[in-house]
Image 1 (spheres, rainbow over the protein chains, first blue to last red):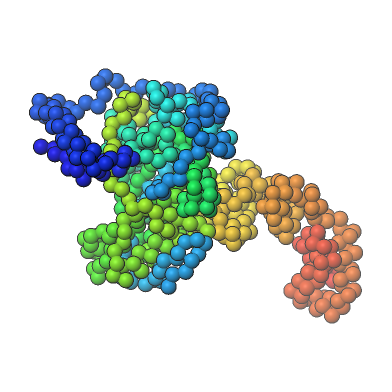
Image 2 (spheres, rainbow over the protein chains, first blue to last red; image 1 turned 30 degrees about the horizontal axis):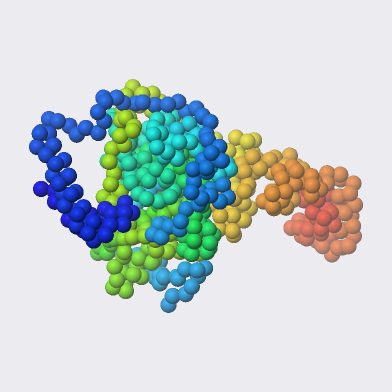
Length: 98
Length: 515
C-alpha cells in the first residue's frame, strides 16, 4: 500500500515551507498514511473503463476575447501588501532561489 | 587557477578544440516566447512593456482568494499557430496544470502551465547553417503557460541575488501568455554546436515575427532561451556516436541574445570538459549566464519534476480545438523559412554568398524591414553588414538590439542615394543616430552635413590643388589616371569632406585633359 515515510513527509514539509518538529513529523507520517490508504481505496472501484476525472463537468473551450479590462490601481494592490517600496511588493530575501 | 572576475570565481576551462577531441556535445534548447496579445493569459489586464510597476494587475493575476481565471482565446490561437509553423501535431484535447513552487515571482504560489498534455508536440524546424547545409531541430513540444513577475533584489549588487537583503516585486508581467518551445536533444552538431544553437534561435525568432505572434524583442525578454548542455565521450566510430549514453547536463537560464546563446554553449562545453578531464562529475544544476564576463556561475541544484507536484488545474476546463479550427489556422501560416529566404534573395538580387552573409549576421528581418521602409536592398545590406555590424560587434551587441532601426537605415540610405551625403558623411550621421541625436535627416541637418553640389567652389578647390601639385598633375596629363587619387584626396580635404568625390575626379581629369 502507499505507505509514506517520515523522510517523504519531511521533504514535502520543506517544499511547502512548513517547519515541522520531530514530534509533528512522526504524527503526520501516521496520519498521512491513513489518508493515502483511504484515497487509494477509490482505485479498487475505479476499473480500467473509468477514466481519471479532473473536471466533473463535461465542458471544454471556455474562453474570453482578447479585450483589455481595467486593472486595479497600484494603490489598491499595494494596500494588501505587508510591505511595499518603490511601488513594488517588498518580500524577504530569497535564500535558495535562482 | 581560479581568479575572481566581477564578484564570481572563474572556473577552469579547456581550449575549445581540445573539447572536441575527447567529447561530443548534446544540447537541448528551451525557448520562452512572450505572446503579443493585448491581454494576459487568464485575465483582462493589459500587457504593455515598461509601464509603472503594479499597474497592470487584478485579483486573477495576483492570485487573490476566489478569483477565477478564463483563457484568452487569442493566446490559444497563437500557440496553435506556433505549433503548426513548427510542423507539430496539435492536441485535440489538453489541460492546463499547476506547477507548484514557493517563490515570490508568482503570487499564487503556482504557475499555470501545461504538463503532460502540451497543445503542440512532435515537430521540427529546419535551420540553415552558415555553410549552406540544413540542420533539422526536432521539437518535442510547445506548451502554453504564463509569465512570472519581475523581482528587483535590493542590497548587495543590485539585480543579483547574492548579497540581497530583500526583494521588490512587480506583477505587471505575471500572467502574460508564454509559449515554451522545447527541443529534443540536438545531436551530431559536433564543433558546430554553438552555431547550431544560435542559428536555431535566429530562425525561430524570424518565424515568430512572420507569424506576428510576438514582439520578438530579445533585449526586452520577449524571447528567452535556456540552454541545456551535456558532454559524452566521443566515439571512435561516428556511426556509433548516438549509442554512447548522455552525460549529465546543466541548464543555463535566461540567455537573452543570439550572441549569448552561441557563447553560453561554447563556454559550458569548455567548462564541462575541464571538470570531466579532472576526473570529477558534472553536477546537475541550473547555471546563471553573465553577459558581461561571458561565464556561467552555479545556481541551485535542479529539483525533480515531482517536487513541482503538477496536477490538472481545476479552475480551467480543457482546451479542445476542433480540427476545422486548426485547419483555419493552418491557412494563415506564413511561407516556410526556406521558401521565404529564396523569395527575398530573388527580390533583393543578392548572390548566394551575399544572402548567406546576411543570414549569418541574423539580418534578414532587418533588411526586409529596411526595404519595406523605402531603403534599397544594396544599401540595406551595405549598412547593416558593414558599418552597423562593425560597431555592434565592437560593443558585443546584437544588430537587432543596437539602437538603429530599419527606418533609420532606410532614411540614411535615401540620403546617400539622393546625393545629399557621401559615405563618409553618412558614417558621421550614423554615429549621431547611435548617440541618440535623432533621425538621420535631423542629425545631418543639425551637424550641417550636405554635399557641395556647387561646381564653382569645387572647381576652385581643384584648381588650387593642381597648382600646388605640379608633378602629380603632370603624371595625370601623361595618362597616369591612377595618380589623380592623390589629388582627389587633397580636394576633399580642401572641401572639408563636403564634396562629391566622383565629381571631383571628373573635374580633375577634365582640367588635365585626361578625361
